[in-house]
Length: 365
Image 1 (cartoon, rainbow, N blue to C red):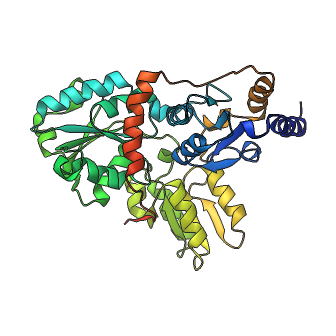
Image 2: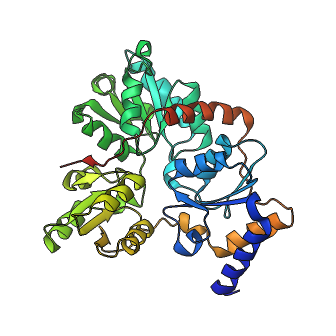
Image 3: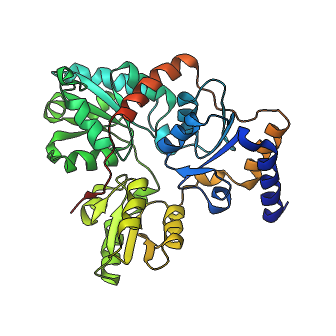
């Protein structure tokens, strides 16, 4: 089938399934798929929207695997969550499994003079989220990570997590940029490498650290370099450079500000006096912003495309295949988190949901 034929068939299937179907599209999704989304947003927003649907019983998540897991965790049992292509994963989420994180908590704990509380980025597996919940920690998003860190380090008597130290899993850059923005010195950060005994840390390393970083990263945001920022400013000195906090520290430090996808979208929409932007995040979102704000010049920070190849595994053929089967009453590619794992993961997610996000960008430099 041609793309036009696929699109026509998908539209007809949406009509056939009616209000029983809800299609979710992540901001990084390709345009030909996003056009069929009933809602677009970041992973947490979409998972919450999935849970809030009264009529929909079929949630088709056009994202990656951990997102579909979160939607299933937060949704009622009478809803089914489907991922059009099960090969759409997240390499960063795969950089931390629950057994490795459990071992890290033990190893760091033996060298710590106080409680170590895990903070797991929402970009993590259901089993890591569950371990986080059991260990008294919380999940975080790139919008509320600063406030989650503050909660974790606050005394239990004040409603906090009571941590002496945080183990931030799995993105080192998000944790580093957040801790430095909160005023912690570089010496207060330590890197845990799960491939090394004791993570490669000594007792002195842990004693100095308030935040222990997990050696993980997003390969898309790691594409951006300090040279990209310098080149953008050389091209147009008045350009405003904003980047995602998953970018390396040297990139964030040279940018004007950093923020989550939702924060970036709001900043551009409210930037009435700013007409040039270089944005360091996934290309599909940046190009969509450029089309939405035609009076502005909006470009990807790097010269080449910064595409999430895993997100791109969701295409029209996979989407139609799932809808065809749902129309026939045959669920395929359903993502189901076991009840015991979901219960503990829900605890970590609920702590995250209860902690307010930061609305604006974080100034850098």
